Image (cartoon, rainbow, N blue to C red; front, side, top):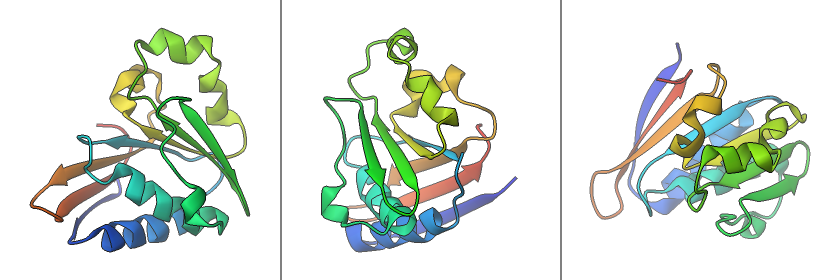
Length: 144
């Protein structure tokens, strides 16, 4: 199992780590993000999208009210933010699980809302606060 632990000291470092990670991903990858509000998930995803799609990262924002944003470039990224999702049944009813096999890379913020629906090969990225700007980011291949 792949496991790496990183400490970032600024939003720029978190973004850069996301970009490097994104460049390593292939179509069909699912990445589940876990961490408190403001822990750096969206900042990391901006970098990840930049690494995958080579698009202007200012276009990348958390789809809190729509649940899904799609970014198209060299590859496609499906960016889910499930913070406001009441139940995993709503995810299934919307047909969102079909995106897991839709020929793109899926990023799922607040993945704990649909943990039982995620394939075992999903990357798990955990964010923890260590200080004002300091974050610990753990990347694991496979759900724990």
